[in-house]
Image (tube, rainbow, N blue to C red):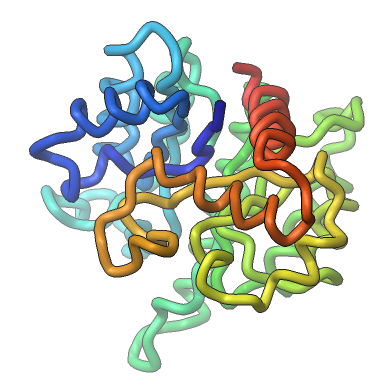
Length: 277
């Protein structure tokens, strides 16, 4: 059994066949968490999850590239980027099939030279902090996106933990750095903050993380597809699906010279523990 901890079957790429993809994924002994990136996809993830008794779960959150940076809420019209509404996401997150907050975080890669960079970064940090607060208040793990922003990310996470000690009364993991692409030093910085890391199909066609994967503690990692993106070998260039997460697990097994069943068992148990499923 496998658990794809990060898939976007709630995106338009699957508008014509999401239920078929879900069913063949479940038939392949693979569960999945469908990840929201704004209000509409968060609601859609929950709608899909509610169709199935088990094996399909949802996360709700506002991705940094979908944040509306205008001051006025009135500027948010249909099709525009979104202002974060704490109460709306809180109500969604309290529903039974929601197992996490996210994906949220920081993304400086998509900020262009023509943008007001400091304003956008400041808004991303503000919205990220509000979602961290929501996650801890509801005792839900947080799914974190970080692209070209690890220095600021580490600073925010350290300060958040220091300023909210009452929300961290145990030592259990409280979130995951999704689609991890950093080095061993960065991985341990996140481990020390109580976070896990997850790997995508990226590791099947690049050897940059082989050494890290040989050394990383197995109780700190999970697997994901980030479907429809990041398709693993031998499916590069095609639409990714949750059932292909087995190729990520298989690559880790090859790198560590252990049976695939071992990686399947460990990563599944890690996901069940973090997301309480």
